[in-house]
Image (cartoon, rainbow, N blue to C red; front, side, top):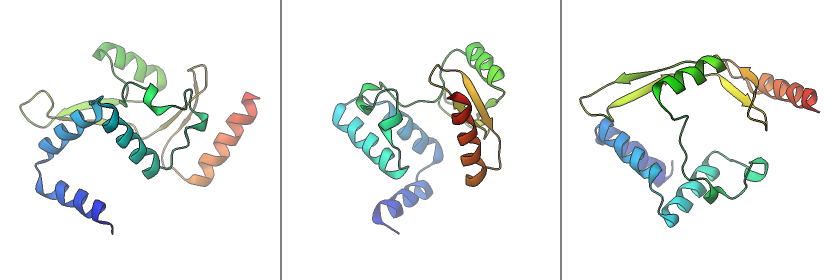
Length: 140
């Protein structure tokens, strides 16, 4: 285990979860360029993300990395139209003291922003690869 991973585990065990959530919440929204470059580099390396197929290969062109955001009615309409669900679960008195429980489905969005496929759990690599190949063949 690396020192970085050991430190991450220690922080998760020592810090109250609400405090850790707030730290991550604000850290991911900080737009200071050197910090943003560091976070992007760490995430793309950790999750082996290839930006070659992104709409814009320059990760700094994206203002932030957030999940779907919007007014509650807009999010409800979006999730219902996609066939997924989410629920906000309060876990403390503050406005940021909550978690989001959500579907574990993988949504495949085509370059035009349309839902091209929905992959429900369990997520098996062989089945996902086969489904993606089928979707790409149908798109050509």
